[in-house]
Image (cartoon, rainbow, N blue to C red; front, side, top):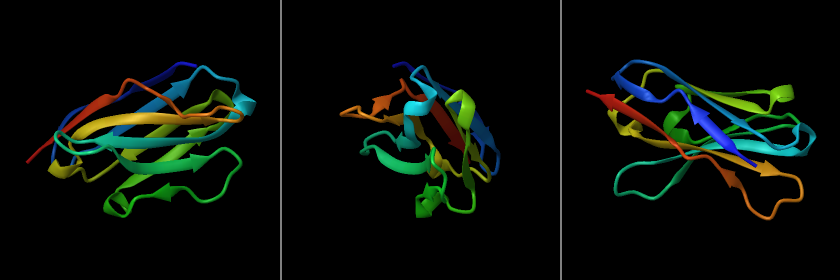
Length: 117
């Protein structure tokens, strides 16, 4: 299963970016897709998750009200709309995919987001 992120870049504080992620697995096998991020010198941290069966997404407190996660259910794509970006949002953003029956998550290669003050 291939996981491919896109949409990263460099913006000034207060700006916006939209990250996209698609995976090559079977649509009906998708359980959830999520975004994580890793800043330099820090551990990877959870950002947001959305379940294919529905229900409210999970979003970490530090980005609530600024980031929105959404999905294209039939194209196994997930999006992260990031508004009012702050320098502390600078990180490599990774997409993770949970597939039914898989032992581990599938990860993308990451996309860099850089926010300058």
